[in-house]
Each structure stands twice: as structure tokens, then as C-alpha cells.
Image (cartoon, rainbow, N blue to C red):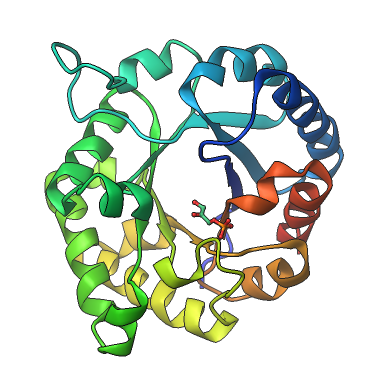
Length: 255
Ligand code: 13P
């Protein structure tokens, strides 16, 4: 129930946006967020080729930028991968790891995701570790088990100091891009479970770690979701592609 955790709202653009449109969106978000931001942290995770553009347009603003995935390796013969250290060269703050789209389409295991989180931290980035169950898993009553496996792999590999710096995003797979949002009660139930699991490692860390909700968050449902005691903000997909909608979600996080 700690209120020390400033809410964190991060846009995940996924594979959307081109350089011209991005310039408008980044500029509008930076301008709007500075007026709204009090007490809320704001970020956008853009496709890799646009990290330099984000750095150029967001430097000096209240909006931080991030990368949507990082390699589990520091460097070497891994064609197509991007090292966390490379992202750090562009002033990146956040690295999403273990997004359900990577777990599903690229067969990323909990152990691989944990290594990516560790590499991100070692490069000075804040990993946003995504966890979440599919509809089948929820219907089978295995939500807590699935999330437990995803989370424990990360908690096991990190030192306590490293674990205190992560962000967890609960993203039920059935709510991503579907327009079906978890109810605030459903989200709170899982968020409380995640925090309790982290408390199993260390209660102080559990009180510090931000747990975002992601999955069809929009301006119309954000305030209700963010009012739950263990919901510390959101990871926003589709609604982060429109400045006005995204800024309204940021405003909802101000409470
Ligand atoms: P939507 O907000 O489009 O449902 O996407 C959520 C998400 O996957 C953010 O990472």
C-alpha cells in the first residue's frame, strides 16, 4: 500500500511509427507531459532505429525513452540483436523484456528473459519485465503459477540491489490489443500476488518495485485501474500512438 512509488506510464509503440510521424508524436508528448507530469514518470519505448530521434527530441524534457527488447549478450556474433550497452549510448532509460509477443513469437523462455533483465541492469537501464497469462491459462486457473514461473526466474538471477530497481508489467495476454481490459479488481488481485511474491524475497524490495498494468488501457479506463493500491501505472500499447490519448492516460496517473 506504499504511496512512495511515483506512478510510471510508459508507451510501447511496438513496430509502429515512421520518422516523420514520430517527430510530431514525440514533440507533442514532450510538450504535453511537461505540464501534466507532476508526480508521474513518463516514458516511450520506440523501435530501435528511432532511439537517436527520441534522444534528440526528448532530451531536456520530462519524458524518458526506452527500447522494446535487448539481447541477453553484451556483444559478439549475434546478428540482428541489439545490446543493452548500445541502447545506453542513446540515453535510454527503459528496456522492455519478456513482452508476451516476444515470449510467444520468439519462444523466449523465463530464463532468457531473466538474462535480458540482468544485462539491461548491468548496462544501467531499468528493465520493464512483462509477465502475464493467456486466456487458456486463466481459464485453467493457472494464472498465479504462470506468473510465478516468469517472475521467479528474474528474481533468482538478480542481486537484491538489482531486483529493487526493476519494473514489473502485468500484461494479461488476453487483454493486449483486444479492447478487453482486466477489471481493476482482476488487475489488483494479480498485482498484489506479484508484490507478495517479491516480498517473499525481501519486503523492502517489494515495497519499492513498481508494478504496471498493461492491456487495452485507454483514457476512459486508466483512472480506475490506477486507483488500485498495487497498480503503479501502465504500459500502454495502441493508446500511446496518439498524443492526446496518451497524455490523458498520464493525467489519470496523477490521481
Ligand atoms: P495495448 O495497450 O495495445 O493493449 O497493448 C498493451 C501492450 O502490450 C503494451 O506493452
